Length: 207
Image (tube, rainbow, N blue to C red; front, side, top):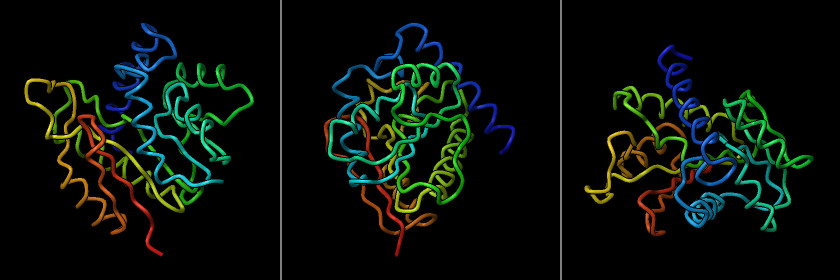
């Protein structure tokens, strides 16, 4: 891990812990504007998750994805990974006896599916190039951990200009498609049609 990567992670953790203190274990506490938009993101990310899969949720926050999965016929096992001790404490409190919440990334090829929701959005005042390097490094680490595939979302560069904020990262859908196709697997799906100013990338390992 580079010094820049560790520094960025520390700053992002501070940001999200401030949201948790202000709003508690709610969608606003992980910087989403509504429960409905959070659920819609989970639906898109879950397209890669099948019944019985082991799921690693990177940047799990208070474990909202686990609540969503439990409303489906998934019936697998869940690991929530987060660098924030405050978030993990809330996740463990809310989901006592359900799921596993950890502060260390699991080893390579140790889970079926890896997902991340909103992990790459808040860049604060970090330089765009440094943020992109951080995101790319994280995506590669996520893919290394999965046996079957991964899914993540990114705010889209096709957002309405008047709504875009300088502290957020807006990615080019085609750039991310090319990145994962060239560095992870060519079995890639790009979802850009579900009514939010973002896109979801699904990547499956080539067999």
